[in-house]
Image (tube, rainbow, N blue to C red; front, side, top):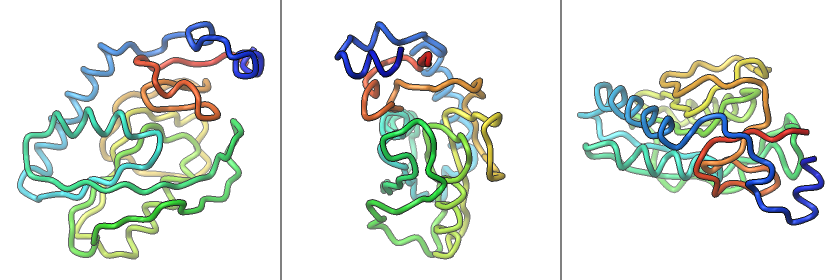
Length: 184
């Protein structure tokens, strides 16, 4: 069904099965922002979003934080155009901010296999931040191949192919306002 939808140009609403509504997402973002505020309010943290998937979540999260912070983005790739990770991560677009001595919060849309996030956390540890934490909107532990410590978790999701709210399938479905899953 997915290949048919993508190749036929069918409307994304034909493929979606809502898993998490926009209202539920807003509640999760508010809860995460409260916890992050409690821990990082006086630390002028550097928030690093992993592109492209985290951009909508990070935008909503940042607007819910009411303290001084800085933003940067890194673009990593491990999926290419498929639904399975290649297992190899590469930096497509690096950071512009200085990391040494900073309190760093990585913002991710979904932690799935853990390969990409583990790569980034090791990459950032080498830059000697004052602290390093991970915030993810979605956690899919059933697919984990590499152990990852998540400091702020929005929701745990089942082993389904997730799209929407910034998360894509072959660059499609990012603009869905809800978090949905696709059938094979």
